[in-house]
Amino acid sequence: MATQRTSIHGQWSSRLVFILAATGSAVGLGNIWKFPYITGEHGGGAFVLVYLLCIALVGIPIMIAEVMLGRRGRQSPINTMRSLLAEEGAHRGWSLLGWSGMIAGFLILSYYSVIAGWALAYVFRTGSGLFVGATADGVSAIFGEFAGSPERLLGWHTLFMLMTMIVVARGVRSGLEQAVKFLMPALLVILLLLVGYAMASGDFMHGVRFLFQPDFSRLDQGAILVAMGHAFFTLSLGMGSIMVYGSYLPKEASIASSAVIIALADTAVALLAGMAIFPIVFGNGLEAGAGPSLIFQTLPLAFGQMPWGSFIGGLFFVLLVFAAWSSAISLIEPAVSWLVENRGWSRVYASTMTGAVTWALGIASIFSFSGVTLQDIILSLVGGEGEPAAGGLLAMTVFDILDYLTANIMLPLGGLFIALFAGHVMSRESVREELAMRSPLMFRLWFGTVRTVTPVLVVLVFLSAIGVIGGE
Ligand code: TRP
Image (cartoon, rainbow, N blue to C red; front, top):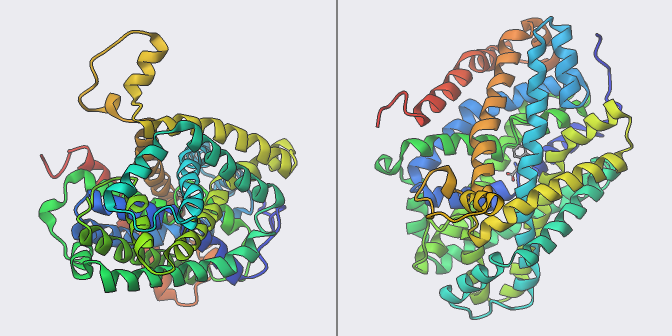
C-alpha cells in the first residue's frame, strides 16, 4: 500500500506552526501541575535528574521516531501503523500500537479534564479576590472543600470537555493555531514573574536546592518509573498525539530539530514552574509532598499576598487553562481522525461521540477527590461492608489507578514499541529518507540510540520497578 502525500485532514501551514502546536500539546498540566507535585512526592533533585536523563535519552529519540512514523503514514495513528506495517512487510500485531494509544488517550483525557476543571474554577476564585490575605491553612481548607464536592467538579469538568470538543470539531488547525501563538509566550512571561516573586519573598535557595541538588538516598525504585513515565507524559509521547501531529507536517520540514526545540521548551516550562512553586512551599512551611493539590494550595497563597495578586493570579489560571486545552485536543485527535477515516463520520459527530465517552469516564475520577477508593466502589456495587484496605490496589482511587496505568505503563510501552518499530522493523532506508537529516553523523547517533539505548533503558526501568533488578 502506497502512503499518501498529504493527510486528508489537512496540513500545518509551516514547520513553525507544527512546533507551536506540538509545544501546545506538550506544555500543559503535566508541566505546571504534575511535575511539581511528583517532584515533591519523590524528594526533589535526584528525581529531577532522572527525569532530565529520561527526556534526553528516551523522550527526544522517541519523539523523533513518533513524528517520523506519523509523517510517513499521513493518517490517524491506527491507519498509519497499518499502512506502514504493510509497506515494511511487518507482522499485523504492530497495529495494536495504534489501538492501545487511542485507548490511553481516552483514559488520560478523562482525568486530565477533571484537573483542567480545577484550573478553570480557580480562574474565578483567584480573580475575584477570594485568596486576598488568606493564610496557608485557609487556602488548603478552601481547596479541600472544593475538591470534596463532586457536583462542582462535575460542572467544571463538563465545561472543559465542551471547550475541548468544540476545538476538535472545528479541526485542530483552525482556531488553535492562532491561539497558541500568543498564549504560550504569555504563559512564559507570567511564569517568569512568579519566579521573580519567589526570589523576592519565598525561600528561594531552599527551593532551588530541593530541585537541583540530587540526594539519591531519597530515590526509591518506584520513583525511577514515575520519572520515566512523566518524561513520556510531559512530551505527549507513546500514544499517537505527536504521531497524528506529525501526520499533518509538510514534507520538507525537518523533524529532528523540531523535536529538540519542543522538548527544550517543555522542560524549561516545567523547571520554571518548579522554581516558582518550591520557594513558596518552603517559605510558608507547606508540605512538598502534598500531592495533586500542591499548586492549588501554594500559588493562591502567593497571589493572595502579592500586589495585583488577584489579577495576576486570575491571568495565570487563564493561561494554565489554555495550556491544558491545547494539550487536551491532542489526546483525542488520534481517535477522532480514525473515526473520520474509517467510519466516514463528520468531525463534528466524531468529536461529540468521543467527547461523550470521555466525559462519562471522567465521572469516575471526580469521586477520587472525595476520597472514594476502588474498594469503596466495589463494595457499593456488590453490597456489603469491609475494613478499609490498608494498601495496594484496593486502597487506590480511580484517579490514582488511571494515572499510574497510563503514564507509567501504557505510554512507556507504546514508546518502546515505537522505538523498536522505527529502529528494527522499518528499513533503514525508509527511515533515513523520511527524516532527511542533513548530518549523516546525527542520523547515526539518533538511529543507534533509538535502536538500542532507548529500548534497553525502558526495559531496565520496568524491570527495576517490579524488583527484578536492583533488589529490595
Ligand atoms: N503533555 C501534556 C501535558 O504535559 C498532556 C498530553 C497531551 C499527553 N497529549 C498527550 C500526555 C499524549 C500523554 C500522551 O500536560
